[in-house]
Image (cartoon, rainbow, N blue to C red; front, side):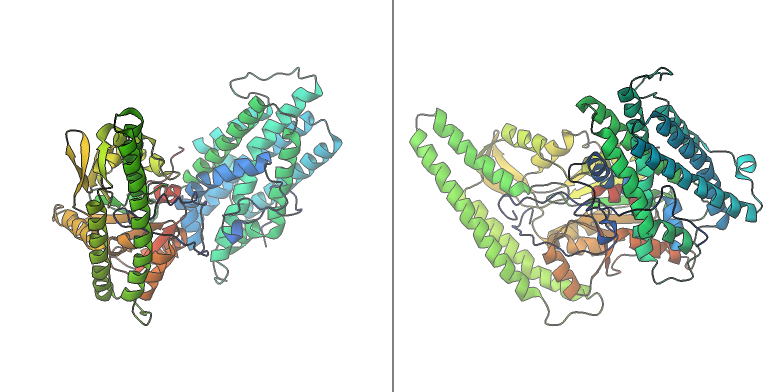
Amino acid sequence: MRHLLRLRLPLPPLRLRPNPTTTKSFFPLSSSSWSSTRTTPTNHHHHKQQMSPSSSSAAAVAEGSAARRFWIAAATREAAFAAYTPFLVALAAGSLPLDSFRHYLAQDTHFLHAFARAYEMAEECADDDDDKANITALRQAVLRELNLHSSVLQEWGVDPTKEIPPNPATTKYTNFLLATAAGKVDGGKGSDKMVTPFEKTKIAAYTVGAMTPCMRLYAYLGKELGFLLKQDENHPYKKWINTYAATDFEGNALRIEELLDKLSVSLTGEELEILGKLYQQAMRLEVAFFSAQLLDEPIVAPLTRYRDPKDKLVIFSDFDLTCTVVDSSAILAEIAILSHQKAGQTGSDNLVNRTKSADLRNSWNMLSNQYTEEHEQCIERLLPPEEAKSLDYDQLYKGLEVLSEFERQANSRVIDSGVLSGMNLDDIRKAGERLILQDGCRNFFQKIGETRENLNLDIHILSYCWCAELIRSAFSSVGCLDGLNLHSNEFVFEGSVSTGKINRKIESPLDKVEKFKSIKSDLDSTTPSLSVYIGDSVGDLLCLLEADIGIVVGSSTTLRRVGKQFGVSFVPLLPGLIEKQRQLGKQEASVFKARSGVLHTVSSWSEVQAFILGNDFS
């Protein structure tokens, strides 16, 4: 029961570096030899306000522009899947075999031939002289990059057009680009008789829309990876990364985005929708392109590839504000209040029920305010006077004993108030069905359900939520209930109406971690296992540390403050994985260890899925 209807803003897309955190309230029980081509250099770009500084390129692109809208949508999902591909993780770590990089360059050469041809076809369709000039410049930049690729490959004695044929992912991508440039869009057959300027301009817009994702994604990845490698002068692929991290390449991405915005101005709503689909399809083909690059060495991502298939993978997740946008305790309290309002509108004792509804709301507000104030005081009391230099798990456990007792007392006050009585089970289920999950969360659990048995994987929800039926309804409504092991509290019902009492099973950090340990101890001791815990608050801290891999979603300042004081480090997941990849060949034991004192932060569930399960677009 964290804070009354405390909403969380949508998670920003992939963030590779720490950022300032925001305040969050709680209530318990839920408590160069490389050139910067692909386009010609000009200007710079900024894509999403909540992105990390390295991705903040975009002030010049107007708010509401087509290019900006399309990228924001892609940055919350496809960009993460691209960054977590084995090829890019190994490349960023500097462990990518030279032969794999050589193969990538050959595939990129095949792609760039099609890219240049698509520009040529778009130029033929453009009606405006300035547009033609821009497209010509973009095509010339691609031709310069092709010459660069060829010269590098020739130094290695490789003729990519003869010795390394395009793989299926490259072929699929190039066929898509050329079909779009030929007007074969949305099931169309194309036409050699596009005589009106508008028809030609529309095809030019579609073509540029299908080519822009390549530019923006490369600029994004270059800057993010470039920031991580600033101190590594001996990195074998530093020049390649610096090419796409350069400010002039950021200008390259802006140039094609501005062209896309200009060409799309005259499109209808339906045509803009087609343009958006082309952009998304191209972005997914980019992810598939990176995913298809050859890599035989051990890799830390995706996790299903890192661990031995015979080993058990056990995934644990919190529910409130980890999976959801709104805390469930406030929703349940609101249902109870509205139930009495509804009774007051229909029953003979309507005045009594309306009065009771108002009293319940006042009681809930007082309980919420009291908890918020006392929780802050409790956090202050449990913090040690000095910051630990390394993880002090025993002292953290003792501190959270204090918090656990406080939460149990707060829950007792809620039960004694009677605010949770009178709820109909059907109303609770309907509320669960309408519960909004975090972006990417539903996709992750759906994918888990589809692949769980094949991947030798178990999934558990550990939650303070008062009513397990609400959680069941939330996951059932999006087809994610199958195979889900739920550990939570439950209302006590008389018939189908809540009594206000709770069957209290998990209501504190200590309850959670004991359940976590119990589940792990019940696993087959003869089979090795790897555990992941995903959470967002202080209530998850012990479980996050006990798991082999602890993943923090959201930006709780309280969690970070408490963790830091007890010696916990918070590291963005992708940089952490890149460092793990560097360690992979230097040690025989697992690079992931419980109680390491390091927790990994993410900005979206897409990152979680990309890390654990991998590419979803092949």
